[in-house]
Length: 245
Length: 245
Image (cartoon, rainbow over all chains, first blue to last red; front, side, top):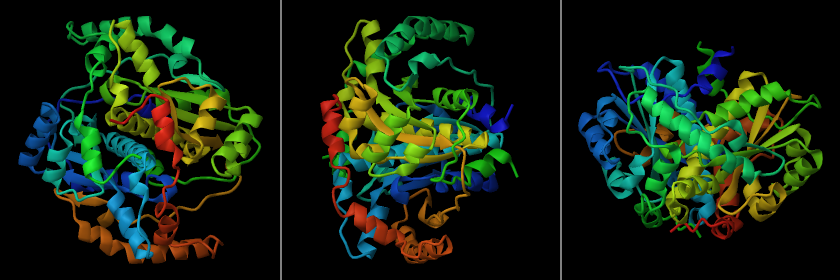
């Protein structure tokens, strides 16, 4: 089978890292995959911040809600929306940027951040490195902004650990294709019908990996999504200049 | 060089497609790469809609602001935020979803849409197919929602054409690494300093590809970003139940 397809279809999030450092050359290849990713209007309204300093990674591990793998993996890469970069371009052409006031720009930057993060995760794994994507930096966006010196019109959207795996990670079951792929028109019945069997598959998965206290997909979601989780995101976006009109 | 790295570092957006159809087997591999992508909390709050029908693709080409390659390429894949799927999971666990009211959920779904879109683009290119990502479906979100039968708590975020290239596409220059990568702390001076040379590189690029009327990066951004572009996104998100609080 095509190695690239195989890599893309077997994403594993690794949370157990060895002490081995990450080569600068390997890191440069990862960053290059992010830099070369396509973006809306070729706007390139993203910046990445590479964090190697142990004290900063320890702080991020706390800010992300207690994710010790961030302190342990030698490199953490933050992907930030960067409408300050595009504002500088617009200003260079003698105009004033308005687009950052719209919900559209937050959506566009977030999609582009996902494309770049995905490319960087695949580029790391293609070099034998391990990764885990991290959304938890959005628990405390203001503290992340201060830590990284992020200026107005930027926002820390997501991040990833990079390192050498200390242990294999299992492939996690996903909802089946009929709950993901629709042909021509959306099929709500197919989505709902898939949930009970998937809940059972997740419970089996947790038992198989030695975590018998693991919850079903539905129960995990009910815990997080029945409340306003990461409630500081909207306010911090607005404070940074993203009004989401 | 590692084939996967090479593929990720040479993304080309193809806008010229042959009539050759896309095999169902190749399409299934593409969708599988999207389905297996990681997501925030393993929430999997995405759905994709595969559009093959020519009339629908012609309509999407118009709604996206006149993008004839959508009508021409045999397959168009829409990636939609799907907080209806997670709401069904939360309900299956006896609770009521609140998370879709927060700006966080729009950001999380958009990042995850980008990760899945990027994986699907790479999976297509790894099979010798050509792609172009499309954000223009957000010009007319309400019409896209109606066309695809998308229910409340879903939103069409982005899409991609898939087909066989009729002509090679050039690699577009990007801003240099010093305007993308920051180490430990954000460096605004490095970003601003890179813009004049990049504007010249884009002008040379347009001349090289036979489009001497092409504008610099700054001038292109000034045209789009000095006004509230795609102004319907915020309202359509709110109508679908994403309040962005």
